[in-house]
Image 1 (cartoon, rainbow, N blue to C red):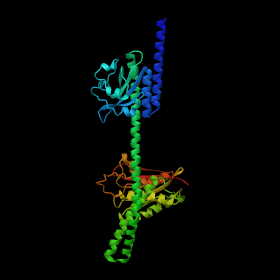
Image 2: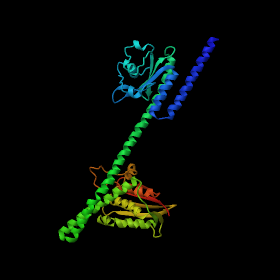
Image 3: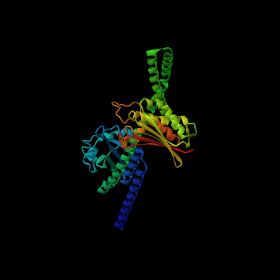
Length: 415
């Protein structure tokens, strides 16, 4: 009768342990907070093995050693200050050999690292330690300390090993998430610094640029012959600089979601004609032919005329910059269901297939920065994309590859 009762109790105990392991698995898979995970793991290990305490030691890859990441009833910040050597310590031996270890009389083992016991005022009598495997490496050691009512057994090894395997995966996932979050924060911080620089630079440079333009205009009006030509060159360079500052300012406004839009009903043909008028001079200077591929019947859109014109000016400037002299640029528009499709097609350098999306990224240049033969900051297409998308449109590039030209297409909702 006593034997039967004992077996029933043993089966009940095993069932409770299995249920607790299942509960732990659910908990570990439902949170990615590292501190919470560590506390759950040590608490569960202590309960499952009916021991006084448990601890997690993780491997520090920067400084080859183990450190306490968590321990029952102890301050992890204080424990983390105690380095546990890989050589000559019990945890280090488990980590190096990747094998579990049972010591039911720890004080007699010369590898017992007494510094920890002295620091936390906790006497270690018995210890069970198992490695924490993740993929093809060991990330640390899970220890159970001071078994109540007897010695650690092989069954305890199996239970703690399962716990350690679950724990290793959960800790690894939490670490990956934390690393990703830190990387994103750095990217955000870098982008904020970049945006601040663009905003400050475009603001601070306007005053001296205005003075340069003012004096150059005065000199041109007063001077004659060669001096007048010099003044005109200064004016041309200053105008180019002002255009770059306007681009920087527009990018800053788009990034901060502060670009003010004043939509009104206007035909897409008018928008394209306004854009063409603005690039007539640089196109003529390179003997380029502008061809129009749209009908006279107006196709109406509801957009900010000035900003949308700027978007197409940027597309046209891009076509001019990357096309050979004397080539043709086609500007077209047509209805496409509930949308209006407009495009700028050139016969220039073309775009590699894997770069069709990247050309819209800010400051991106297909050419290496030190050897590129074309000018520009690499933000014109970024601004065009921002202006189109903020008005509910889409923009993309098409190209059959290098040397085969490219077509930039835009769709906008029909008014």
